[in-house]
Image (cartoon, rainbow, N blue to C red):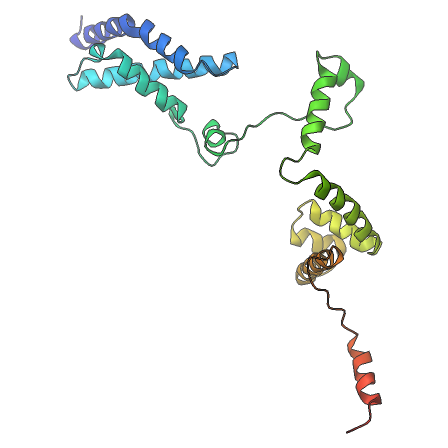
Length: 233
């Protein structure tokens, strides 16, 4: 039997002797995770990292069986920070668990429409309750006070009524975060005009709610007529 294969078997046997302690430490470390599948994934990553590091330490002439708790603790910390056997999780990907942990947010599946069908609501357990919770979370704003949110809804509708139908359609398209190029093609105006109208809408809204001065300038032709009517001094 080759010596390398025998050494691998010996290493594997010695690793199995400390594996129960590693798994127990990982279960305690990730006991706060409620999702069973997520917790099992973390524990599996800890076990894989420990085996990888166990072999690397053996190649360096070190016996990890002398400090199995330290090995398991380092592996659990690495997994919590996004370390995986196949690499590191991306910190700028919104679907990455590492990014969610760093910035303190979670990603959850949303229904396809607020007006869900009766089959989707009542065919699943707690379907109506989940739908109500989803709608409540979207309507609730923990940053803006309630009185300001109500005032904004009333003022924004009143401000829209002061505009033309075409301007209202343009504002709704801007609120959908459409690109300037797409807006210019849809409304048949230049991109510069779209940017100019965006600033005008912004200034108009600020003036409507009293947060900024509004300068109502007369047309150029009227100003010329007014100057022509004034007697020369």
